[in-house]
Image (cartoon, rainbow, N blue to C red; front, side):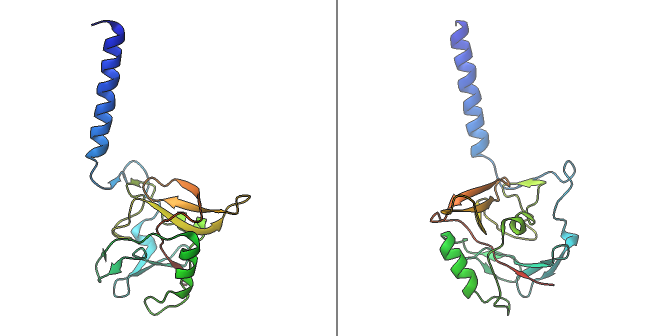
Amino acid sequence: MNTLNRLASAWLSLGLLMLVSVGVQAGQDCKPTLITPSTPKSDFVFDDSKGVVTNLKTGLMWMRCSLGQIWDGKTCNELASNYSWKDALQQSQAYVFAGYSDWRLPNKNELVSIMEISCVNPTIDLTIFPRTPSAYYWSSTPTAPYLDRSWSVNFYNGYINYDLKYGKLHVRLVRTGL
């Protein structure tokens, strides 16, 4: 086998190995001993009866489930729904949950504040926000100068991006709690 064929074979093997390792990835990967957790559970007050959690550092109250999911007192059931940015804003304005009617779409910085940087797939603490999809979530923050886009946060890897407002992304609502 000549050098070129060996090199091609090695690259092919490496590519297959990478595909297999991606395909068998099973759930969240956290490294709290290597990276200091950014959202420790001690920063939150839980109200399991209502399905909300309040961050003591920010004063924000969060729905533990994404829109489309249902809180059963212990976890989130059902699949998270996807919304365009306009629909996400409208949903938040009309949403009544846990006895509150002042829910809203979080801004980019608020959404980033619940990311858990010591975890990926998803980049969020699943004991605080159970069954959060490893996917993009809308923020209320539009981009400048692109008026047809808004900022989003990818809870697979923590990537912050801007997306076209007609795209369909997940939603988690927030309110000023304290």
